[in-house]
Image (cartoon, rainbow, N blue to C red; front, side):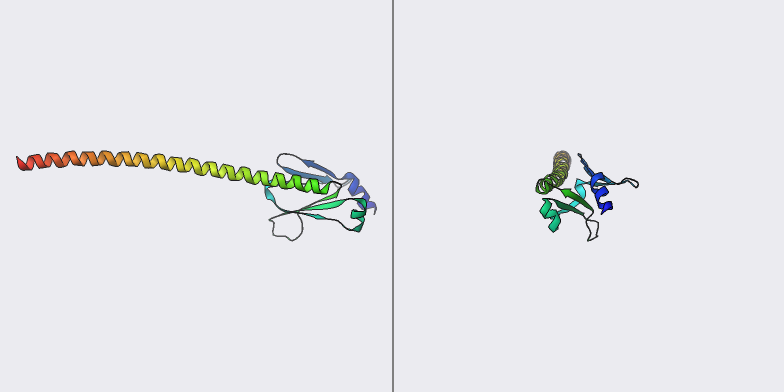
Length: 143
């Protein structure tokens, strides 16, 4: 029980633009950082005592291949608000990645169109030159 008491009172969370940082411990300090982009699933869990106290655990899962959660935010009072915040950040990262990918595809598409225009112009020049050569050959053949 003493271990849980100190763990709870030394637990610190920090949320920044990159992800969630969690640190705890007195003698052996641990720190875990999880990027929003790696988050796959978020679950709320609470046992009887946690529900009685109005607390819950937020279990964050990544695509690590393990069934266990990657990070557990413990003792959260506003657990639903925190879950919504994490979902918003997770979606924001994905939407930014999709927007960047769409922008890159648009640039590549524009380059392809410009390349197609350049190719069409070059082929038009070749066709004009071939017509000129044909006309010269016809004039020489009739002369």
